[in-house]
Image 1 (cartoon, rainbow over the protein chains, first blue to last red):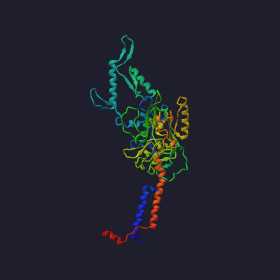
Image 2: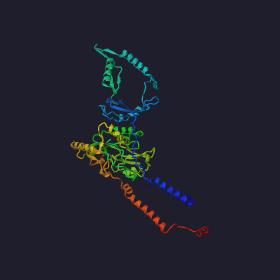
Image 3: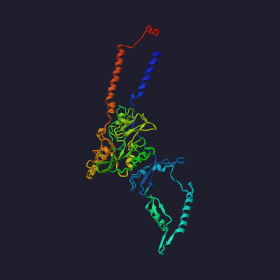
Image 4: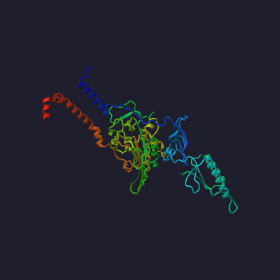
Length: 195
Length: 293
């Protein structure tokens, strides 16, 4: 095929013109029905209990990662557990925002110790923490335990130490907590139930 | 799945017809304002599911937090202290967000093909990938809902969790609601449920209780049960009779065919001028004369 210089220019111009019109939106595009990818497709569902208050709502926690050797799992979404009798799938604003609570940089993950008068918190091991607590409990109880009052009646009370227990406990752990605390003679006893 | 949303009904700036053989159920969110306690669990659940986090604001002395919708806050609780009758104070709490109009003003106003779509089940969704950030959807919306993000200059709003609905789950806000003020289901079921609630409210002394499903935008897929349906303005200025701005209707309605005809006429006139008068040609002597001058 023979093309003159003039014809060549015409072909080029026609091509440029038609492709520009298509690019400007005159050519209909495919109408695709696309939604945001459902993000829980390959996640692991784990049941748990909300740590905030004594209502103890049931949670479903969704994590990614298939637990392979080189993979670290991470929680990516939390919502209410519809099978839980307390909340039946619903959550309050604090529960609905639990994901950021789990991933918060301020979250306390290990025991810390601040000596009297010191400004800095120091990380200690669980072993050390338990030993310290047990030591203090024993010393304080030995020093301040009141077996009988002024009238000679048996009271068996220990007023210098209080106990703050967890909120989201089962009946069984609540019963055990109560037994331990009361058998030590502690009167100041509360549960973290109203955060 | 009955609630599946994968068929498109309408698409912004597109004239090609959408597949319409299947007729999926129309879905709706029902917000029963008489049951809402304003706890904002829906706000938190919305941000968590949709992976958006608004910046931490400041307290303005009222319960509203954040104070307005944003590209990162797709739903906010609006708190209004009103006196519908003198001496009778009421604290009305309205969950604000996209109403998913059956005749969406945002979609009509949008000039970018496929940036706004309406699924066959009624959900109006933004596809930010196609958004050009012009903000016309904000002008087109009778409820002032879409917001341009300062990060990427694209418009965002509630999607009615189209990703959850497509796999047969309820939107995140509905699931979290502890008082059951939020419900989700077919539009028929939600209307029926609302009727029961309205009968109950009327028996409790709210004579003007009613359903907010404004006809001016073809009905909405987010409906309110209002204690004072005769005065929706009490609920933080909920419009009584929302309409798409006449400018948008004119520009995207009547003006379009007129402009098309005008453009065609110009092309036709050009063609006939070329045929009858021909191109304007100059011979060499004329050119030389001009150059000499």
